[in-house]
Structures are given as C-alpha cells and as structure tokens.
Amino acid sequence: MSRPRIAVVGLGFMGARWGRAIAEHHGAALAVVADLRADVGRSVADDLGAEFVADPLEAASRPDIDGVVVCTPEDGHVDVAVTAIEAGKAVAVEKPLAHTVVDAERIRDAAEANGGLVLAGHVLRFEPRYAAIRRAIEADEIGAVQAVRSERIGLVADQDVLQGRTSVALYYGVHEFDLARWYAGEVAEVWAARSRGVVAAHGHDVEDLYSVGLSFASGAHGTAMIGWSLPPRTPGFGIAGFTVIGERGVLQVAQGTTGFQMVLDEGTVDVDVHYSPQVHGRLRGALGLEVDHFVRCVRGEQEPICTAADGVEAVRIALAMEQAATTRTAVAVGSGADTKRDAARGVSR
Image (cartoon, rainbow, N blue to C red; front, side, top):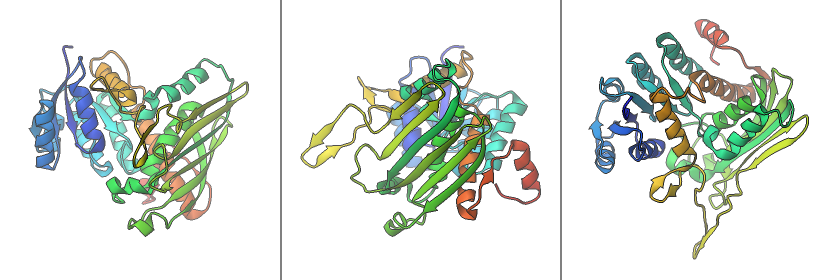
C-alpha cells in the first residue's frame, strides 16, 4: 500500500494530537478531520493541511479513506467505529473503547464479523517503561507473576478539561486494568471501596478515589488505587506507577520520576517527556509510537498490539470496580457471553 489516507474523528485533547502525529508521519497522510464543532474542525484542518468534514459518519465511511481514528467522547465511539469497520477501514479507538460494556462489545463484534482491524488506544502499552515490564514477563525473567500493584491518581484540576463528563473508572481505571491483564492474565474478581467529596466541592459530582483488589484466573492477585482528587499543585501530573512481583524478581515503573525538571518564577512546571512530547518539532513519545504502530497496521505490516477484545475487557473490569464499590461486595468479571445474557435479562454490568 502507498501512503494510507487516514481520517481523525473528534478533535479534542487526544484527537488533535493524533491528527498532528499522523500529519507528521512519513508513511501516512492525514486526509480528513471531523468534529461537530465546525470552527474547531476547520482550524485543525487548516493547520494540518487536511480536509474538514462536518459529519463524523461521513468521514468514517468515505471510500478514499484507509484508516479511521476515533477520538470522540466515550459515548460517541460506537457509531463512528462500527460505521468505519463496516466500510472496511482499519480503525483505532481512543481509550476507553466505549462507555458501556455492551457498546464496547458492539465494536469488537463488528470487527470479528467483518474481519476488521481495530486498535484499542491504550497508550501505556507503547510507553517504553511499561512495555519493558511486558517484555521481561514474556522472556520469563521473573518467573510466574504472583502479584501486581498500581496507582494512578490525578489532580482535581483534571476537571478543568473534563468538567465531570466521565468517571474515574473510564478515564484512569481502564489504563490500570489493561496493564494488569497484560501482565497477569484474565481478571476473575474485583472488590473495591471509594470516597467522594473533594471533586464535588469543586463543582463536579463525580467520585474522588478508589481502592481496588483484584484476583486473577492464574492465581495471582493485586491492588490498585485510582482517582483524581490531588491538589492542583501536586508535581508530576499526579501519582502513578506499577509494580509486578514474580517468583524470581520484581519489575517497577515509578512514573512520577521523569528525570527532567523545569523551575520558573512561579514554581515547578510539569513537562511531558514521555507521552506526547515535542522532539525537534515533531510529536513523539508513547503516542508517536502508537501512531506509528497504527500506520503499520493500516498498511498490513502488523497486527494490533491492543485489540478490540482487550478494550472490551478493560471496560468490563473498570465498570465491575464501580459495581463492587456500590454494592460493597466482590464482583465476578464475566465473559462476553455473560454480558449478552445479562443484557437480555435487563441486567447492567
């Protein structure tokens, strides 16, 4: 395939970055951008040399497009993704795959029914430190995984952008649970407790913080702390990291340590040096690696590192965490067949 033509649908925080990275990529062309906000869409199109299309579904199904990146809000993923899949496009969907398990499964099932290629956009799989954990596990360097521990706690200031439109489970939880599955295998059961009030005091009726316990089908176990209630001046974009304990060793990412510091008159300034930094005028880092992988997938050179099925399971576990905290009981993490059966009986998962 010559340089594939790619459309980006949804031009918010992540969509604008996907668009730029594709426009800068030597092996692909950013052909189309789409957003319901015409002023935003036209501005990005002008900046990146792409065509603006007002209708997301039109952009997702155009015959002159080879790949589609879905970066709409979570509840808008399914229609755009399924339209693109059924039109024969390779598709990348920003995390979470969808805002419900049923919608996530619709994307997965459409891909399976149409032989479609879907990359679930879990960017931490492309961050070299987290990928190094997986590589060591695959090489059997630490033996069987016994336990995992993670934390991802953002700032109250996250709501300056999010405005309460999504949950901790879908915004941060899917990251941690996708990594947990990648390292330790399928999650069998989740239990959780949560707190709220800090973010609500800032005007957004969402939960603050979860403490989560996990058990895995392999016999491994783990914990996670997930939230966004830290003070706005907390350095390092919050607190995050991952630990994997094996039979013969331990692997650890301390995300807060970047190795770079900027101090100005107003104090320490956080600078992204891992996820989407500018390096010599180009967007690089984990997102740059993810975009490069997607371009290779569109060209038929690679298979997705994170599939639609992986995206479904991350959403399933994240929402099971919410259910466990609400009911104060352990929640079994069922299969896709379980979800379809429960949906037919009117049960929400």
